[in-house]
Amino acid sequence: TGTTRPQRLLRAVQERATRGDSESVIAAIDHFCRHQEWAMNVGDEKGFILDSVVSEVSPQTALELGTYCGYSTVRIARLLPPGGHLITLEFNPNYAAVARQVIAWAGLEDMVQVVEGASGDWIPHLREHFGIESFDFVFLDHWKELYLPDIKLLEECGLLRKGTVLLADNVVCPGTPDYLEYVRKSQSYESHYFGSHLEYTRAEDGLEKSVYLG
Ligand SMILES: Nc1ncnc2c1ncn2CCOCCNC(=O)c1cc(-c2ccc(F)cc2)cc(O)c1O
Ligand SMILES: [Mg+2]
Image 1 (cartoon, rainbow, N blue to C red):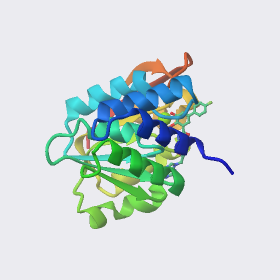
Image 2 (tube, rainbow, N blue to C red; image 1 turned 45 degrees about the horizontal axis):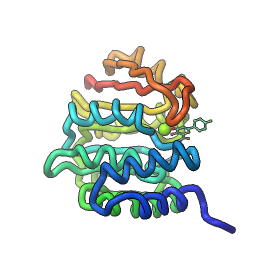
Image 3 (cartoon, rainbow, N blue to C red; image 1 turned 90 degrees about the vertical axis):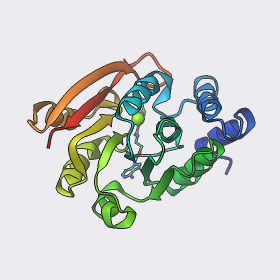
């Protein structure tokens, strides 16, 4: 029983990145994934698109579905405006444990809440548990077949408002066909595809940005 990949990724952060410097944490993870071991972070190329959307929205309240090691959590949290807060849901307790340490190494623990559990179980309780009225921004990066049911659940729970921006990773690879069809056809969303590549590879992938129209 050696270490897991997330544990090796965390060690690379602790060895290569400067405490409190989120840029160096992002760079350390990208270096590890390019030169040591591939891992399913959104990566630098799609991460640049994520940065531009987060900067444009400048969310006070943000939700991430699928934390993994906290790479996109750090990318989002470092761009939040004063008072901004990010809730990130992670199913796997081992991933969540690594993510908390990565987020702390970046010095962003005060803006982020890592919540362990399944998205479908937690979404109906976010309002009462965290005092959230609605989300300004949602990043979808968890099980690809849960993207569609989970945005329908967010709608039903009244957690989306006119103008909420959804950004979905992996809409080409591994792919989220039912989600794409829904947001592109629904009168309740204005959708746009940002073509890119699967993290650290030349395979095609992209992000779908969808604005909820209410
Ligand atoms: N809170 C929650 N509730 C429910 N479920 C949850 C949860 N939190 C986590 N999960 C479950 C799973 O989370 C990880 C999902 N991410 C991916 O699977 C993923 C896979 C690839 C990939 C892999 C292999 C290839 F060959 C090509 C591409 C690339 C990516 O960028 C990915 O994001
Ligand atoms: Mg992904």
